[in-house]
Image (cartoon, rainbow, N blue to C red; front, side, top):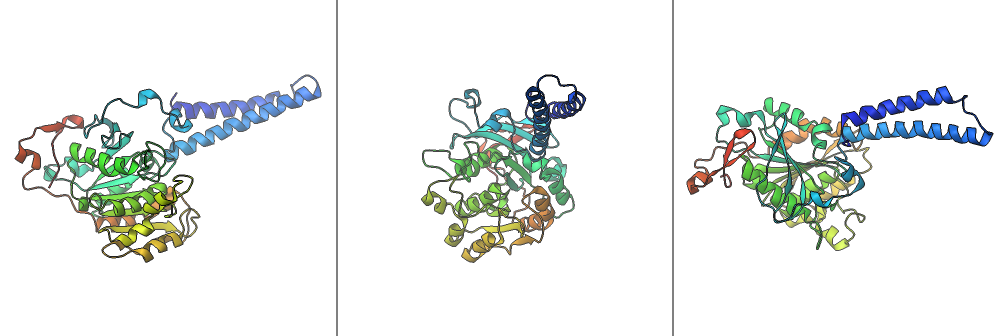
Length: 378
């Protein structure tokens, strides 16, 4: 039974209720020596507590999409999960409903494999947008977490769609990739280890450009993330301004990095957004956090602002007076935060001559029978 299955959740609720009823009914019916009676009662109490904790754990996991499978929870990956041979910029997408498609993708450059979810706005299929290429917002989840966290906990596909419908956010493709397909690296490329930065900035980016009507230039690409994903959404545009022009971090982790995640002090410094902000990358950044968030302090954001050198632009940070390290706090910031992002992201554009058609290349099949011209947009 799947870890995220509703059947498992409701079965565990039933087990918890049965455990309590059985304990109450059998409490005075236990027979035997005093030691045996107390041991039996202790076991019954433990069973009640264990089932209650399991219900709570499943509820939190399902709500925040922390772990997607038993293997994910246990930190295991079976050999069958790792395909042989090189990857490519193409993949088979499965229609998951509500404008969302997904694939288990293996990047040809990073050789990492992970889930990638893509949501297209309603405008994507409207006649007046025929031939238009859309900007892309890559949404990066925290660790632990899964790409679905931005849908289940972040409500991105509904709340951002609402902003698009009101004209507060230009129609954009939302891409939700796994940020730790080879284990958590704070989205860094680890020497002789997982090449997570390559996975996100090249493999996933090229996959989306190949399969969807996505803008190719960096002004059409932004990153937004929460927690560890927020750290990545600030760090990666600074390192790869030729791929992403904008970064939005909700309660990003400490910019100096986590020694438990990246033991190398040198590597942590190379990926430190505070250091990178002084290198003059042509990107725009915004940090949104809460004064009460112990994992993402105001001082962390202030250090980024102080270190920035033109043409790097760090917007005045957004600071909530209340709220913790959670989706409720971050969703309350969506209107202003994504409104800011909208002012730095290219709107949908219609190329004068599609690159693929000019080159005489065939189209690529998309989910739902659609076809897309191969090659990058203008």
